[in-house]
Length: 299
Image 1: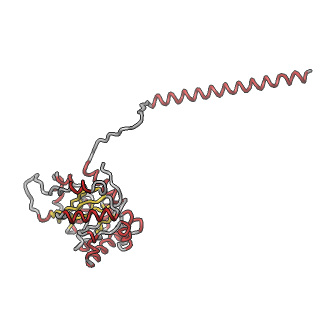
Image 2: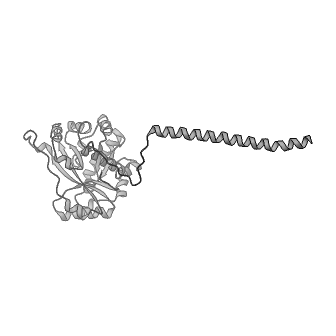
Image 3: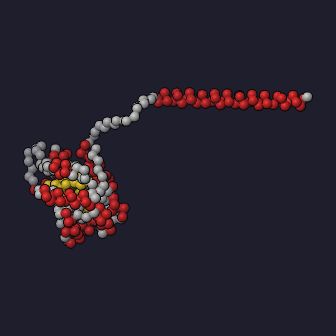
């Protein structure tokens, strides 16, 4: 399994300009991030249904050159965010091979029906919202509870909130709704930054918990622990059932439980015999020491 280190930022929008991407990645390294995800968006509602079994989702962007350049500094993952309006996306996802190539799959609903589906049935890892029109969709308590039980996480992006005051109000409203409906469980913070000046350090991001209605511990978990849990959940979904081989460095000793029990019984018998022998020796010593005393009294 791939190793990850804190801190995390799972929303760095892909840019075709390598200069912009390198500037973003360098800034992330300087701020102290270790694991990031490059985000690729796909609007399912604008695609027409193709032939049965045809591939609808795109392949991941080629970022091998960036991974080689930052291999000792950043762990770069790939994420796809699917925008959709109805439940027809489920069939397209079930037959897609390209989706398995992404490390993370996020759902961005556009309607209330899509939001309920995203929390209850969506075969992904993350629920996110449009920063521009995110406050139009507010999750209800039942859907939030089901999503938490399924291991889904909810994302709050701070980058658009820094760039525009209207987006800031919308994201605060969405975050406050998370606290009201589900006590802000399974929340992660991501930047969604399109420019390096929209990035903030991990501890500054954790302090945003007070603005978004989270506690101090929830703010810290939103950039560390919850992100790690999200990654592990995504890996289990992507890999499915696997076989693991464990190699030991030291000698391997094979033992049967029956042999162990028998050896334990033999040890117990030996201890009991030894105790009896010690007791007999002590009695003999006492008898020998008492005989001369008796003779002296008789004399």
